[in-house]
Structure formats: C-alpha cells, structure tokens
Length: 171
Figure 1 (cartoon, rainbow, N blue to C red):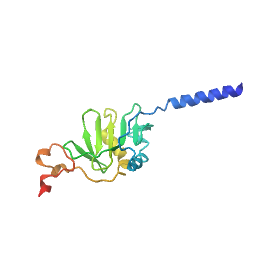
Figure 2: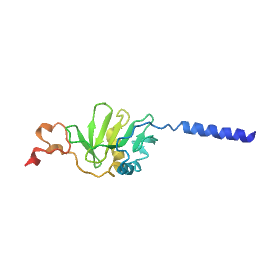
Figure 3: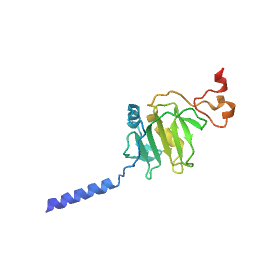
Figure 4: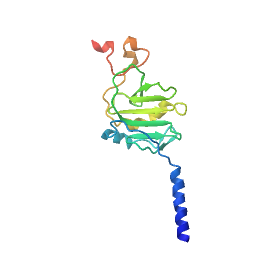
C-alpha cells in the first residue's frame, strides 16, 4: 500500500512540474530543415531582454517570455531588395515590417536562409531582442547588406533600403 501511495505522489509531482512548462505551438518555415538553421537553433540564448526561453514544437524556432513576447523562425526565402526600413543591429541587417504595429516583424536581409523575428514591442524593444539574437543569426552567411541611407537614391531618402543600386553605383 505504501509503495502505491509513494508512486501516486511521485506521478502527481511529475504532472504538476510538467504542467508549468507549456510548449509554444509554432509552424516551421518552409526551409527550416536547412543545416544552417540548425547552427542558429543551437546558439539561441536562454533569455532575450530578460525573458526566459520556452520550448517550441517546430524545427528551427525559438520563443521567449510568458506570455510569448519574442518569436524566432529560421528557414525563410531571402527577401529581395525593398524600400521598407532596413536597420543594422550588431552586424545583422533586418527589414522592418510594421504591419502589426506596435508589434514588429523583422526579417534578416542579406542572409540565407532568412530568419524572422516577431516582437511584442509593448513588452520589450525590438532593438534589445535583435541584439540578443545576433550571435545566433550571424552563423548564417552574409550575402548582401542594407544600403547606407546617405548613399540611397534621392527618392528613397526617407527610409534606408536594402541592396538595390543607388544612383552613385550605376555609373
């Protein structure tokens, strides 16, 4: 009888402990199985801007915060040059998508495969999140970079752009 009681208590404690560690459900990117994404995944930090990492159920992904505040996914097609804002943080260039503002979706520019990071900016700054993730993302080879806003074509001066030719480069 004592063994059954002990076994039941042990099982109950395991269930309580595992009940606290919820897994974040995510869909993997189309190219999440790229070996370079594995290089990124194994280098993801335990915390981002003070937010603890959570388990995910999709290959080449990461999530931080409870509720989830930062999500990373590797394995996207590299984006083409764009007039969207492009920022460089700790050696990684990012295209900023403000569609869900104040939350931001940033996609690496000039790295293949591409990485996307989604940040709930009411809880953490995008700069802090991207800075914390830069060490992992720099594992991807750099093939292009954001155009310097000072050398961008005059019609694009309002926002830095990505890898397209400026008027100065076309001569």
